[in-house]
Image (tube, rainbow, N blue to C red):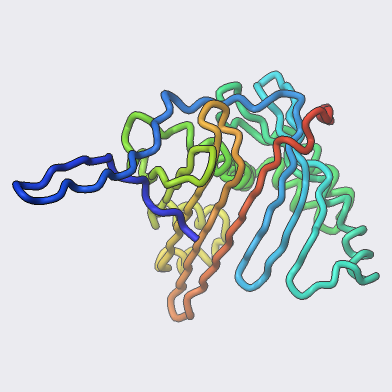
Length: 293
């Protein structure tokens, strides 16, 4: 499913005496002068997301509402619907009942606050979300309260949300269009792919430092588990792909594929694979007014 690497520079060669000239090779895609962020404030974009986690697959549809914010732009998830799920008949009465019960949770989705230049800054409504979840699930209220004050847990949550934005926009701001079709920046390997149709196709691969993963795990596990984490074999690889408009960084599609491995001493290794594929429709909701706070 991966696209091929970017095409090589065109060469028009001439052979020696009596040899035919080499055929003309296609030129590489034209490099954009710069990648810039320009999502339309007060706009709405439709998104279809297909999630595959281990052996479970799920398809969601929702809209992103883009709102002016003091810090830049607020990106809000709205109208979230499950449209397909492995092994579940969504037309059954039981499935309809369970999805109806989950609908309030779907609406408790973090708002992303991004700067005018497209950098992720924060979760815009985190405290309000935690309060709403504590009210909905009083038996877990203590956990939600801890998230308000536990800096490590809060930072991990914001990091997870930031990764979502990174695959859509944030990562690509770091790539220099004039730096060639393959670049490595801050440990992330970027490459330009052959695109079909309009848009700039890119891939970024990050292989995590095991010691960074270990340090993060040590902060989040109970104290009695830490000796095992110190000796564990930990690995993680993230691969992001996008086809986007280089003038606005409005993607038409995006993908995040993540693989994790954890091998504790004396135990069989645990492997986790998850992919998220996104299709963005910037036209169908054109003219619809964003729901802004």
